[in-house]
Image (tube, rainbow, N blue to C red; front, side, top):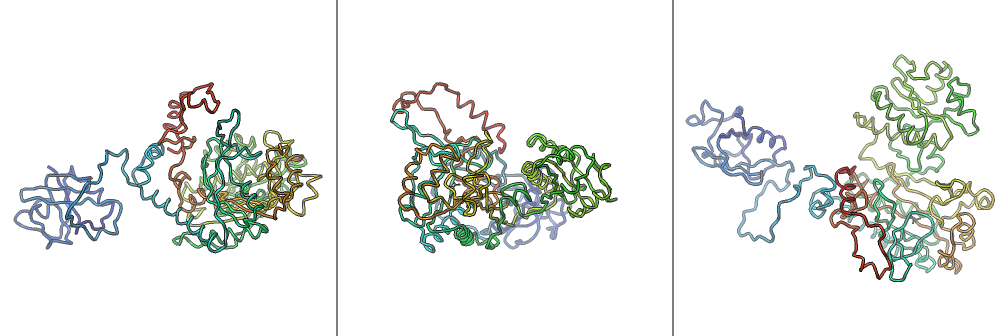
Length: 619
Ligand code: ASP
């Protein structure tokens, strides 16, 4: 026998709370006695129930009742029919979602079954936990969730508004460019597509960069495209091998023109239910971003900025600081973690030091400022009174703060502290401190990038910081021929809450300059780009543009945990389509027309399941 109680008699599916649901299920095997407002003496005196199952009518509406009986039927874990000696009564188990339509019910006249549905691999309820691998395998079912519906519909609405803004308000032309193209020198690795001509391949473009510049030469003046781009960059969190850009190019424009256009575009397309976008966005040079936040994409929602404290330690007795400061480019830097002494545990500090050692091969010293205003640190005894006061002043330290201190060459020390700044923010937030308001959208332009960076694998050579078509800063042109590594560029990035959501530049429209940069400075094969160089020679207008990463932007706007949650059919972390099993093998005879022979067949099935399923980091 089952006992069951109800707090309320519902009119149809009214709006019950989730808590009640649990209580009902929790009480099925136990007797529960609740106070009642009303009793029917003959049948319900001295017992747990207030009413029998057979006696309730609409005249009881609104009353709290306790019923006891046997479960006669159970439907979809939502409806129970309870039976006792007196009759049957239907119970509705309240669901977690509150239905705005809960006030009404439809009385069915006729019903027709349009299709049947097999047992689902997971329930279509947002709160039911499922692995990401399973969601991707049955993506067409996962798309039925309210969250995915919301994300994709919001994406569609924002793109619609962007089209409206660009085409209808500002005269842009929406132009599709090819996806079968040829290899572009420099930049990301491209996917290769075999052709029927022996040894000849197409490449999938990493962006429509060349085409959009050629459209400017072609006099289109203002181009945009919701463009699919392809980059074979292996598995990286929050990257997809194919992704979408809002790609834009304009003739006769400068950097401020592009920035204003983008600010207006985001303002216009921003969802109405979010706080409006405030323009103009603040701007910061690359050098400032690196020195203050240790990255070219600073999250400006919170402080913990990097402070150069080299001068405090000029005469230090701390050996490792002494060593670094004696070198020409040696610096000492620190970040302040507010109330770190209260929130950071010993194991946190250990993991912070490990990150520094593993990723940067660099030492980090934690220094705690105790309530007694004494230091707690392995180097505490070497910090002189004067240094201590200067440190407190420079870093605006309060009791219970922790500083993380490192020493080394400027860029390396800043990059390390930039990473630790984010790690510490995560740690503090895990302990309940709110540093980054989830409702806040903090946009930032990062400008004045260097035109070139030393190549990672061969620092003696240069590579483009953005791409080889980016124009140098007008005041630095002469340096191109003397100290190219010092040239600043007309490249700008748009950052939102610490993620790069867009980047662009004013382009080189002079064929000679473009040839010089490609051939002499970047050592690229100019033959690969002869079509573009030729086009520039035919009176190319000055032009510039930008591309916004649509997936990342929508991910931030919706607050989705991953960009895969704003793409209808994304690839897995490792680049597989877990629904269709792409990429897949092709029989040798079908490869023949492409003059391709697979020399090293792998068991893709085994590889796929070991890579994607059990240990998937985001599963
Ligand atoms: N094509 C560039 C990119 O994909 C953007 C641009 O310079 O417009 O990053």
